[in-house]
Image (cartoon, rainbow, N blue to C red; front, side, top):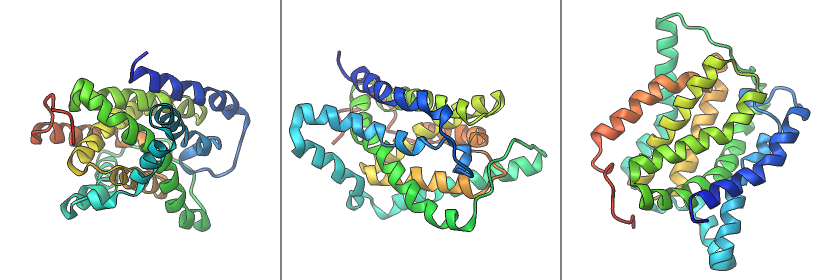
Length: 251
């Protein structure tokens, strides 16, 4: 079976034991109501990518994949604006709209100060575990096969579906599950736009980590609530970019 489904099925197979055990392993005060075992689940995308990379390229290939987590030299200065500001801007716009229209959604746990101090590092490591797989391994291959926009949508749907068991375990109501689908799919479209502009996995690791930190620091705004604003921003990226055709093989 050829990529991408080989990779996606391997991610699913490696994730299955964690999905099964997750409802039975509990912890107090986890960020965003996340299940405890999500800390392990975050590294499954990289594990699957490492297995498939090793089969084709050996340990040298796995080493090259790992180094992409710190390929900051690829990022031109102008791209640090969306890399660092996408998460805060999305959160602030969402918070403003919720206040304007008096929308109240189920919140998330208020984190202790110590947890808030260590979260950036934790989320940075977790984001690297995910993005070495989703972006470092899958993104370019999806782009080559389907084009940038369609590849982004495929990856967004798979990424959200991969999170869905954890979303269910966290007890989110249906409205947040639906909004979370928008957040996941449209968020991935924006991230792929950033990746197309930077060619840097490290950039997406930082985008991912910043988004999680922002969502965890403001418990009154659940991550799923970012869906409408994220959708508008994704549409703006698509309409305002020339990269969304069926591109040549990225370099």
